Amino acid sequence: MTANSNATTTEELSDLLDAEREALLKGDLEKLNALLVSKESLIEAINAVPQTDLTTMEMLDKKVKRNQLLLDGALEGIRAVAARMARLREVKGALETYGADGKRHDIQLDIDSSVEHRV
Image (cartoon, rainbow, N blue to C red; front, top):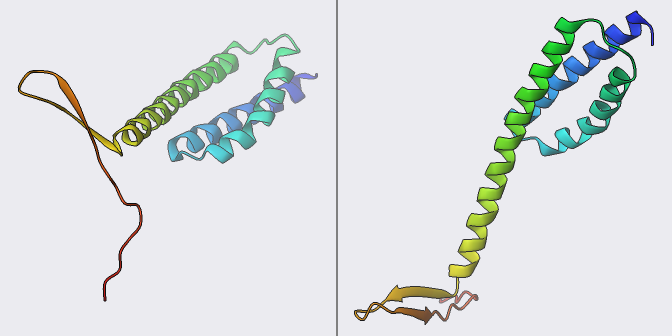
């Protein structure tokens, strides 16, 4: 890889990392998925040759770390939503209470999932 093509590759990766950041901030998971293949190939191309421009590599490193923090936050949010939905499914048909004796009591709810329409 020539110095010119190496500079082009690092510039393309920088632009892609900026696009990845925007997709993370917007929650556009489909775009993140589409960017992944290009990101991997650009990183492989950069890793294939010795790098002499330390400033550019530090800039790319900062962008990668920034995006990783955003991605970690997004994954944490997705896990929280999944856990909340699981708890809601558990509660849907039963109610847990504690009696005067301090013991837990489960009350099963008969929820009719059909809708009655009266005229």
